[in-house]
Length: 452
Image 1 (spheres, helix red, strand yellow):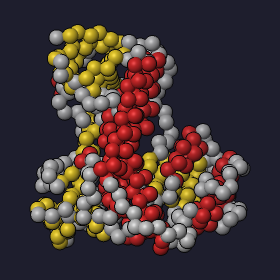
Image 2 (tube, one colour):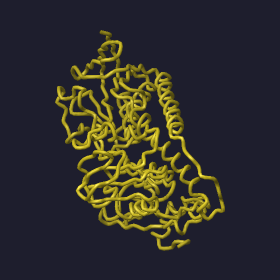
Image 3 (spheres, rainbow, N blue to C red):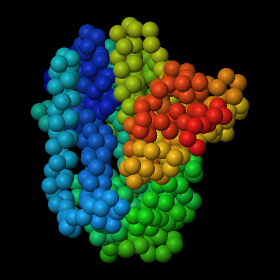
Image 4 (cartoon, rainbow, N blue to C red):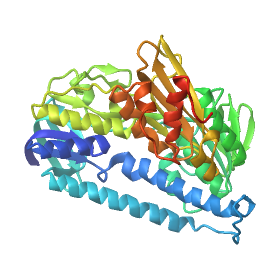
């Protein structure tokens, strides 16, 4: 057995883990990171990045197939798509990014150990790898093992029933696809296959899609799904799948393939945290404002610590923990973390929602009054500002619209920096851009909107 000693051991090389390891290395801490898969975790390998690549490919294909019926005067012969080539292109992007992460870890002086880690005690883990076992003893250990798709007992993964991982690697477009779960993952991938030509049905147990988002934000998404020919069955529970038919409590659904996206679970099984008797918060590891667990010297970041399960939250936590271990005076004090649904149209939400806090009000500016939105044929959606009446401080920003994910940074920046309505309203916004909707929403809140 090989023995390694280090200052910091990071278990998991996903977005949170590799950022933590890189920053720790930059700060001069002797750091080791362990993962049984390629660096980058779910996000780079089988989640955020590949799904966005497929969303882009589907968008381009859909635009080409429907160009002749649009108002722009464009005509084209019927396009076709070679999904094998599309997937190969997607895989190439993943390879470049995961290779880049490996290079960054090396540059920061971080040692990468391949294998599955399991705790022996609060300072020691054993890593089982292809070349044998490695024992690693560290002063500080950071758990960053991420999450995995939830499997339904009556729809186990395998064969025609897929998780998002298998859906992103399909080399042929299924004739029919049932998506069990109307959350953001199911809607993103369901929309991809609808645009590629599949007959898609969304089956959601709650009474509406994206039940964690308010109705005003999800309404344009529901309308767009209908325009794409997607059947949405809400208040419906899936039961079983056999012979290209998904059985539900509301009737049978044609489904050559079934995509199950009912949530994600923390990856805490099999790494030995039970022996450590860490305090848990339900299925998640409980942490304090420094991301330290109930055992001194052991930290946890990312999805294993609970909602929101977002890569950028994990990255921010990882960076903070590395700086804390290097002796910096830091703690988790983020005021707002943006969340993005890459649906069609996209949804961004950051900070407080209307009615969530006493003494707040909200105002919206619709993209139907935005010149840039009109020139891109996508004037559906709006931008909303939530502010505190006492001092006009902006406490929440939301929006729904094509490409609005790129405004997420402006939303979170405004809230983190304590912007007031007057600050945003007085800031010059480039014309013509969607971002003018942010300024206009604040102007409307102040009682003098200019373009509505």
